[in-house]
Every structure is written in structure tokens, then in C-alpha cells.
Length: 217
Image (cartoon, rainbow, N blue to C red):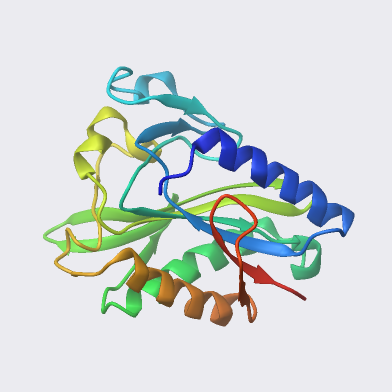
């Protein structure tokens, strides 16, 4: 069931405070949202092409405009970066690496591009489409917000924004690329590849707005 965006952000902020205080473990929440646009801290007014198409919510994550909705796996990553070298740039690359490894499980080559955060698919003939976005915030070296991976969202919803401020390229999804996967299939691989990039995790009962992966150092 899609999770209300403001409720998820409030829960994240509470969890971040608890991690910082040492009263809660690190966590990764896997969820979906109802259809909406979020405007990150670098969002530009001219990149909102249709303000009436979907609700627009301003948020504290880095980045510009993006779309969230059913069929897109959102992963909120709350980690203590003090334990991981306190290197924000390295953390973003680790998130991208997590996505790239996950896509490889479906025989897709996800790639980075200089100057463009996120993960891209080379469609050939000069065409590149974005399949996954990264937008994070760090508070006293505890991360939150995270990544989104397009599994089978309604790609027409991206028509209302310039996604991530990039006008010359499009967006795609696993199903759009001819990969007939379910969200459950993707979650299995996200769990496995997270362990490769970050650390072993333990799946535990949810006490937040969605199923979570708890990492206990």
C-alpha cells in the first residue's frame, strides 16, 4: 500500500534523531508513495512544467524535481556515516553502486554519468534514459531520504516535470525495458546487493511506515 509522503518523512526524521542518540539501529525502509512530485533543495521553478498534474511537495532532500508513485521502489536509507568514514561523496557512490549491482541481477548495465547523479541506461543510438534517482540528506552524519528505482511506474507522469533538471534525456523502467519483474523480485535483489555494498543486514518486522532492513553494527 502506498505510504503518505509527509508521514514517511516525519518517521524518517524521528528515526534519524534516535540513531544519532544511540537509541535506534540503522535502517532501510522499502516503500511506494501515491503519485506526486517532490521538489528538492535545488529545484527550479521552470522545471515544474504542469503544476496541476499531480500534488507537489517541497522536501529537504538534495536534488531537484522528481516523481514518486506506485510501481517505483523507494528506499529510505538511514545510516550512521560516522561509522563509514564521514564521506558524503563516497556514500552517494555507494548508493549508485547498490543500484548498479541490483540492475545487473536483471542483466541490465546501469551506468554513472559525470555531472548527473543517479543511474542511467544506454538505449543505443545516442539515447540514454534514467532508471534510478539518488537524493539524500545528512543530519549530523546520519543519512536519510535515499534512492528510487523505476520498476513499473506510469512514466507519463514524468511529463509534468524536468526530472532532476535534465532536459536532454528521458526516463525508463525495468518493465519498459522488457524485463518482466515484480516489486517482490526487485526487493530480493536489493536486499542481497545491499549486503555486498554496505554490510550484512537482518530483515526484521516493520515498526515504521514500511518493511525495513535493519543493519545492526
